[in-house]
Image (tube, rainbow, N blue to C red; front, side, top):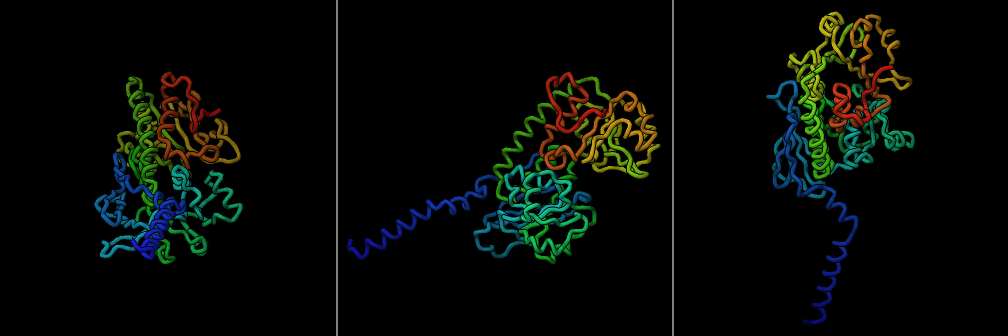
Length: 379
C-alpha cells in the first residue's frame, strides 16, 4: 500500500478512536434509555407506543376516557425530525430544561435525578426541595406565580423546553402554547390507585430519557407496597375511618375509588365512603358527614401550616362541633402537615411509605418498630 493511501486510513482510525472516547459524546448517547421500553401495570391515564423514529405518548382525558387530552411525539434531540409524523406535539428528548407547576412534578424529577433541569416553578412556597429553594435564591430558578395564573412573561424568560402541568376539567392551554413552550399534561393525580399514580414516574421519564431508572424505582415501590397490603388485608378487624375537614361550608369527601379510598382499603380499614364509587372528591355538608362519621374510630386530616402543628384545641377552635366526633373524644385523630413533611413532593412516589404510616395507625401490632414519616397523632 502506498504511503499516500496509508495516511488517510490512519487519520480516519484516529478520528474514530477519539470520537468513541469523547466523554461528552458518550454521556449524550447514554442519556436516554435506548434499550428500555416502558410497560405499564397500574396506570390507566396514559399509553406508550414505540416506532422506529419516534415514541408516541398519549394522555387520556380522566373525566371522559373515550377522549384524548394530548398526544406527544418524542423524537431524539440529536436526530433529524422524521418525515410524515402523525398529529401530535413534537418534543425533542431528552428535554434539558423544564418548568413545573406543582411540588409533585418537582419531586418526581428529583427521584429521576433531574431536579437540576428545573428552571421555573409555580407556587414555590409549597416546594420544600433544597435545590429549588437555592435555585430561587440564586436566580437560577424563576418563580412563575400561581399555577392557575402563570406569569407568561416569566415563562418566556425561563425558556424551558417543556412546561409540566396538572390538568383540570375543561382546562385550556392555548395561552401557554402561544409562548412556544410545549405543555406536558401530567394527569397522575386522577389515577384511582396509589401504585397507578406512582407509575407516572415512567411518564416523566419518557421526556427526560430516564426510562430504565424509572422502571427500577417503581419496581421496588411496587414490591414493598404489595407485600404490606397483603399483610394488612389479612386482618379481620377493620376499624372505621373518615378523612379531611370542612373548608368554608363544604367538606370534600374522597370517593371509594379515589387515591385515598384505595389507600384505606389496602391499609385494612373500613372507609365509611367506600361505596361511593367515584375517583374524585364529593362536596358534602358538615351535617351529612357528621351523620355518618360520628361514631368512626379514626379521623385522618391533611393540612399545611409552616408556623405550627395542629392540636385538639386548635381543631376545636377551627370549628366547635368537631369535638362531637368519637375520634376526637377518644384522641384518635391523625394528621399530616404538608408544610413540615414532603407529602406532595415525595408522597406520590412513596405510596409504600404512606401505606406503612396508615397500617401503623390501624394495625400497630403489624409494624411494632416502624416510625411514621407523614401521619402523626394529634396532641
